[in-house]
Image (cartoon, rainbow, N blue to C red; front, side, top):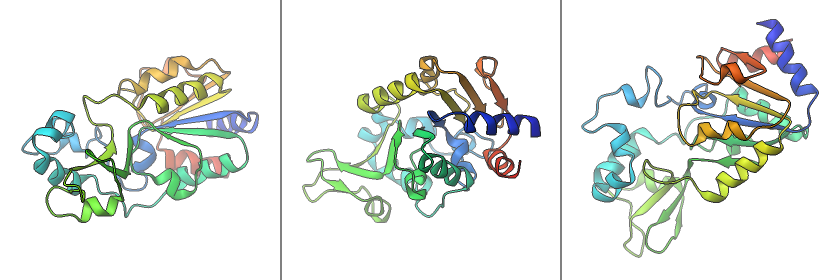
Length: 241
């Protein structure tokens, strides 16, 4: 393990154009459960499947049940950034890390101080009326009773990408452009099973592809360096070697 950590440290030291692509494993260290892990939402019992509840069709047809689930399971406002978030802020401030591309919707990167963050799946921190597009803070949603409504009467929708919805085109284009230009791509805390986010790796043309994840992924054989461990351990070891 120490040899791999040293190699990771060397890769980071020798590059000034790093892109970090992160998934749920970045936030689990803060206590936020992932969707697919053994304690994740997909393994819990609900009246409907989480994939169904978190779909555009369900939101439009059953907004009352959608928001009952959303308020109970997606409120992560009290969680705090962890060592991975903090290390990424340091790398950005040093000029090495150019952008964070995240699949997470919790806003912890920005809460920690990261400036350049592309949120592929949106954020619970942004919410808009589906009629007049008035902006609302997350607390307004989570503290509302029943379906959160705008002053115009419209339903307020969290700015998160639901199943059946496309990713934001501008965010996706920016992510592709950053990955294409990166010298080092660090992919961390993601099983790389979610499309189209997992397809972003194929745009990488740089020198070093690094995969950091607890479990194996189908992309491991393509990487220059693979470390199977929690990100908390990896970044803790990184500071020690």
